[in-house]
Length: 421
Image: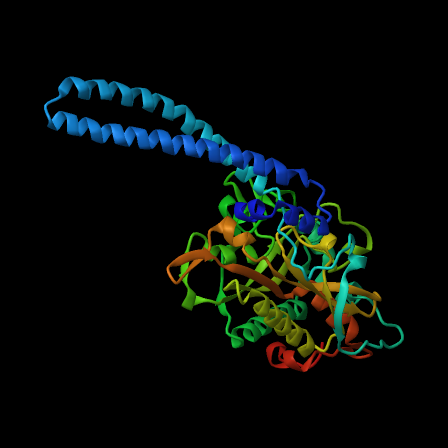
């Protein structure tokens, strides 16, 4: 959530930056400022009335101590009248404060000056590419056919048990999933990230804290009886580990990693985008999250991008890194880099990671703060996929197929226990 001070200091600059995102409801800026003007006026009235009550109460005590009982009783009558004035002001102030907050949460984060203008994924900037373009042998197949050929994944069985988008991994397919998860976690912890195993359901406060509510409730699975949400990513519970916490400057950065299943309704997805492992309702992902000092958060973002890049490189995949344009960014992000790997059999790029700096947007909502030189301020939050498994697995199967099976990257040999499937 944006801070009111940001809007009040330079509303024109806020509108200009929101326009980079192609945000249509710019009128919200004026509505928020108007509502906040009303809030400030009521707050002043409340404080003034409260001060009069306190002064009168003190005076009553002095009058009673001086034996001037009649005057004291008259002042008590004045206090009763002031209290009657105070109650409706307090009630209206609560309504207006709630309205200001409800308007504020409808504004997305302001994009960093590094964010390129643009409306669609085609406007994203390619920062760099790496790895070699795979050359497949004749008769090569997409991953859904390979999964069936080598008995790794049963899509039909998952559809029977639950529905489409819920595959069943079996045999060496399940073992490869487990190997990837362990390798990713080991890679992250070796870089100083502390591993967590968080809950897979969160409450409203947690979903609100990272910005899933009220923006993305239609994309989350909702357990209505208990009013809990299945997590769309480990970012949600891991970031909320520090909700309502005040850290010390010396505690920063806080580096966390976690493996969780992720649950997404993916409403509106169809066609080739949902074939095989391309888009699932349940999938596995290892996440990295950092809480950083505001002065260092963009250095931390670069470090996280470099970390994910080394991980992708270790798998021998052809990849590219994109800087997302304003129109393709997530609601809460100030700057996002996407990693895509090339699927040789499908002849297309598949996203496998997003690494984002949210600046103070999530921290303001979740009240994650730190104290420096006696002053309390918001941390900057960052997160990245390190990595999401389905499309990584799809590309590993497709790009490494030969006539004898699937040749696995060297980094996975000790985790999988074999060099190939």
